[in-house]
Picture (tube, rainbow, N blue to C red):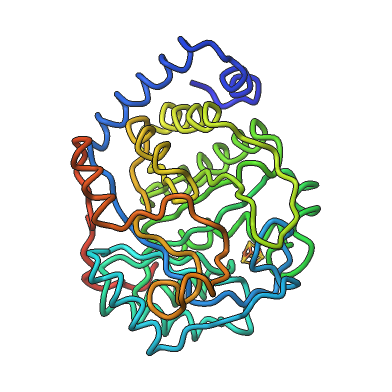
Length: 342
Ligand code: SF4
């Protein structure tokens, strides 16, 4: 199947049930052939909500008056020990984007703490140059998540008003720099509801194809978070309905049979459970999107980056997967040592 805006638009606009059924059938078959019935589980851990960027759709943006908080190494231990006790072996460490408050030295320290608990450590932090990515890789990180959010340059400028994130080109090239630095896994994505979906999907797919050609050894995954309403943030978003969301998952699987597809807790339990069959390979479980949210701050005092829809704990997600005949996978990776990338 070719990647063209016309084709993607035709698929997304086709409302006939038979079309969705055919897409779902093909996506399910390809997923089972490539991945079996396995779903990898991970959990996010927010290290800091300090941010020097102003993205108009995000609760952490620099102008928002929320309580700012950054974990100390002792607090990281508490939060990470909690997740490890739940069985989590694959952690995603997140921060707002601030070179000053969460510099490379802080992130390396966090990765160092995480090595005591998790075999696989990914980061979703500000984009960096290749040398800094290499330093994180050598410290023990093996993955980077960096979403372009939208590939529409004009829209990008409208919603990213200032800070590191306002630099479209620097962000666009971040996956390539992370791959060149040796990162094993790279997650890319768009924020559904920001701009025209067809154009964004087409650009994301082309970006991924270019990455696969240049860095074929990397394990890629894609994410399609839908914009959620956020407390105290007034943002008009385009509604992306469930049928469109499912079509995006199916289409992605058909175009990229071997690429991972992540599903976040922004989606409701009912939808998450229903669409697992059609291409999802990885989902978060037991998530909290506030700094210190697992052990340090009561829920009613938290300022999360966004509200989660699926608040089920790890055990509940595992039970659901088993009941649906899936194998939950906590880790498929053992770190021996991250060698300097050549
Ligand atoms: S999306 Fe990221 S960079 Fe933008 S305001 Fe939120 S935390 Fe900061």
